[in-house]
Amino acid sequence: MSTNPEPIDRKTALVVVAHPDDAEFGCGGTLAAWANEGWQITLVICTDGSSGGPDEATDVRDELRYQLSGTRKQEQAAAAEVLGIHAVIHLDYPDGTLIPSIELRREIVRLIRRTRAYRVVCQSPDRVWEPQYMVGRFHPDHLAAGEATLAAVYPAAQNPWDFPELMAEGLAPSRVKEIYIMNAPHHNYAVEISATFEQKLAALACHVSQLGTDQSQLAERVRAWAVERGQAFGVAMGEIFHRVEN
Image (cartoon, rainbow, N blue to C red; front, side):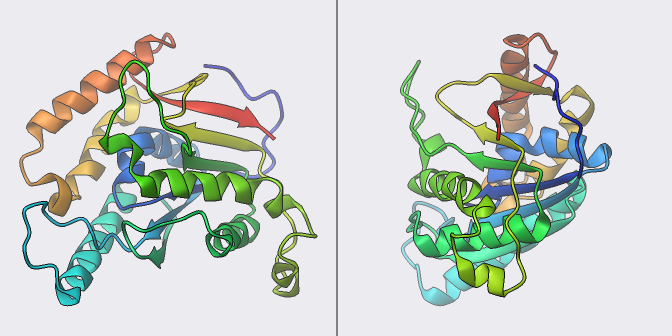
C-alpha cells in the first residue's frame, strides 16, 4: 500500500460498475473508509439489473424483469446508505447485453465532468486466467463497464475535443487524478478495511434478491478473501486494486 504523493484538491469519487452489488463485493469496505474520510462518492450502475433472477426460471416476462429491476434498485439504495455513498445513478442499459459503446462512454464522461471526480473506481476490462479463471467474476457486462470507463477517463473526460456537445452543456473537461481498477490482472495497491468490514457485510446483506437472507457462509468467504488479499500487502484485511495516477 502506497501513499498519494500529491495533495488532494477535491474529495470526489466516481464508482462505475455494471450491476447492483458489484461495488459492495469489489470495493465496499474501501468506499465506506473513503466516506468516513469525507469523500463525496457517486455510484454509477450501468445496467438495469433485470437479468438477475434465478437460473431455473421459466417465466421471464418483461413485467417480471421490470419488478426485479425495481427491487434491485431499492436494495442498491439501501446498501449505498450503509456505505455512506452520496448518490446512486442508474444508466439503465439492458442487463446482460452491455457493450462499451460510444453512448456509454459519453454518459460516463458526462458524470466525470459533472462530479469533477478526483478518483474513479471501475471493473477490469480484462479477464484473469491465473491461478484459475473465475467464471462469475468476469461477467461480460463487467468487462464492458470497465472498458467504457477507462476510455472515458482518458482521454475523453479531460479532452475538450472529445464530445463537444458536453462543452455545450456547460461541462468543462475534468482530469481524473487516481484510477482504481478491481479484479485486474495485476494488483499493486491495497486499502485496509478492518474498520469498515462490517459495513461491507451490512451493505451486501441489503441485496437479498441476489444473495438471500442467510448470508453467514457468504460472510465467511468474504472475510477469508479480505484476510488473504490484505496479507499480500501487509494489512490485516484488504481490498486490492490496480491503482494508477493520471
